[in-house]
Length: 447
Ligand code: ADP
Image (cartoon, rainbow, N blue to C red; front, top):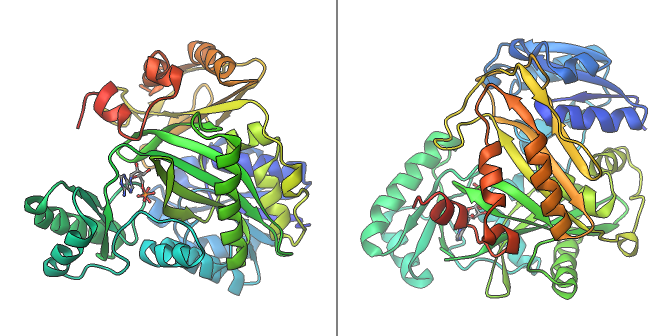
């Protein structure tokens, strides 16, 4: 096993990785920007290195500074966490070139799945059902028109390098195609430095359902069931639950098998998530994430498996500590993403938290880096806490979550806690009958 790991991230995920390392008796090294010198994970780590000023381009995305820090402290492996460099194939390659283990998949798999056009071609070859659409980049408007005729309206123009819901534009009909095409291309160029786009059929009322897989280097691949992530705003997840309220055991096994066979054929290593849209009892692949997911704790809750621990063990060359037949799903789990944002306008609300009270009780888990006196910096993602609740069944889980949301106090900054309370009070949430557009179009009444 590794004796020292450098955690190339910040916030709740840095703390999550640190905790797993401690349980494995591994020494931890925190890196941080000047804005995060007081952060909890920095204080709890065995060593820490300041790698640059506040903007992430100069710190958490600064590859030379991170590699230098790892060499300086003699770290044997780097855990990239979630976001930042976690899906950067060049970073994974550079880490390995310095004889440091990258805790994640092989660079070629990160690269292949990071390009959504290539990912779709690969997924199709591996027998995964796709959203109908183009399988090459659309170079000009004439090609867009031809492809649109084949795919049909409404359609979605999506960025090949897309992420975080950016570079995605809907065209309801031919009149809207040109402006959707032009704006998707320019948004993609600005956000990702890559203006390649492709076309996909725009599914009307799908659910977002994703399958967690895990694979070791001995050819063992296991699926850990699905997560339902349909409660979204701006194509970003707000609440996730496991299992999905609409998937039965038989369907779970079928889609789980498809996902795990596919990654096994690829020779994939570590954690991965295959994301699908689900409509009319059919699954349609949209993308694969080659890293730990923000919503991983709900899978941990219903399987009892520590995903980060397994991820580290796999990177260190150990076989998976369980097989498919050992995976049992118990109860129901829901995660609420709590952001430092105004719950009405969603404008970020950085500032000092003077009062923090954590909810508690059986089945209640908080993943967060905040404390009373913590200053939420304005430079990074506004996610400040994840509240994860587990119950014997969905009804119990919902009741526990309601109570936990009543108990939690994060003041005086604005947070999305009230939005979660509002969602929980709806019949749609109680029954689990939502789709990916429900939150924005019905609850928030925005189109
Ligand atoms: P990103 O990588 O930017 O997150 P994804 O391809 O994972 O993009 O899609 C994010 C979300 O966008 C999905 O969960 C869904 O809400 C919406 N979406 C993506 N593709 C489609 C589609 N073909 N039809 C309808 N909605 C879609």
